[in-house]
Image (cartoon, rainbow, N blue to C red; front, side, top):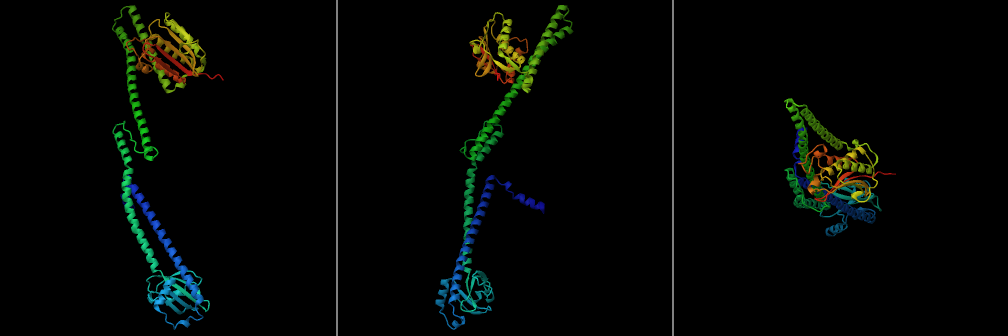
Length: 496
C-alpha cells in the first residue's frame, strides 16, 4: 500500500509539469486560499454583527417588558389583541415571540406573530433554561426547522421571567446567500485570473525560452551565441542575461585559450624535437662513420670527436635551458637566491663582455633610454640569474645587428622602478615579430646558424621568465629600421 501510495503521489507530482504550469497552479492555489479566507472572514463578521444587533434589540425589548408588565401577567389573558397590530408591533421591535414564565418555569402567557406556526416555536422547557442575566443563547425550534435567539430578564413587579426570542432563519439565509455568492464569484474570479495568469506567465517566461534556445545553440558548439537584451538590467531576467553573457564570454575565452595553448604545445613539442634532432643526427652520423671505419686518420678521428663534443655541448645547453624554463614555470621563487645589489655592476660587465665579443662595436654606458649618465638602480635579486638575463639581452643585440653597430646600455630608475636598457641601432623588427619575440623557440630569421641553447630561440623567453620571477619584466620597443630597446624592469630596493 505504501508503494502504491508513493506511486500515485509521484504520478501527480508537480515536478512533471512545466515551470509555467507550476507557477500557475501555485498562484491559483494561493488565490483560492485567499478568497476562501476572505469569504469566511466576511461571512463570520456579518453574522457576528447581525447577532449583536439582534441581541441588543432582544435585551432592550425584554427590559422594557419586564418593567412594564403588571403585577400578574394573567390579568391580560382575556384580552384579544388585533393580529394586524400585534404582528406589526412585534416586527417593529424585532421580537416576534414574547413569553412570561412563572418562577417554576410554567408559561403564564405569551405573544407571537400570527405568521409563526406553534410547532416552529422553541419548546417551553428550553425557554426555562435561558439565563436571566441578559446573555443571548440559541434555542432550537420544536419541529427542528430552525434556530431562535433568546434573551431573558427577571420581572420587576412579580416573581417571574420575561423571555424575548426571535427566529434566526432570515439571518441564516442571508449568511448562506452571502457564502454562496462568495463561492460563485470566487470561482468565476479564479477562472478569469487563471486564464489571464496563463497568458501573462507565457509572456513573462518568453525571455527564459530565449535563454534556453541560446543555451541549446551553445551546447551544440556555437560559443559565439549570446543572450539578447531581453529586459532592463535592474530586473531579475536582465541581471540573469548579463551574468550568462559574462559567463559565456569567459567560457569562449577559456576555450580559445585552451586551443591556443594546445597549438603552442604542439609547436613547442615540434620545436624541441627539431632542436634535439639536429645535434643528435650530427652525433649519430659521426659515430656511424667511425663504426664504418671511414675515419682512417688520427686527424679525422680528432675532428669527429670535436664535432661530437660540440653537438653534446649544444644538447646540454638546450637541456639546461628547457629545465630552467620548466622550473620557473613550476616554482619561480624557488630558483632565486636574493641579495641586495646594483644593476650598474651588471651593466658595466655587459659592456665589457660585448666589447670582448666585437672589439669594433662602440658600446656606451648611459642612463635610461641611453641619455645622461648611468644612475644607481638598487634591487633585491639573484645576481647570477639577473646576469643571465643581461647576457641573453646583450647576446641578442650582438647576434641580430651587423658587426660594428653601436650599442648603448642604460641603467637607472624610471617611475619608481629599476631599469636596465640594451639599445641597438640595428634593423629593428616588425610588429608581428615584436609580438612573438619572447615566445619559446621563436626566431625571426630561421636561416641563421645556431650554436647554443640561447640561439635555439630560448634566450629571450628565459630572460623574461627570470625577470618575472623577480616581480619584474622584460619589455621591447622597436620598429623596422629604428633599432630595438630591450628594457629589464625590477622593483627598487627599499633602503629603509
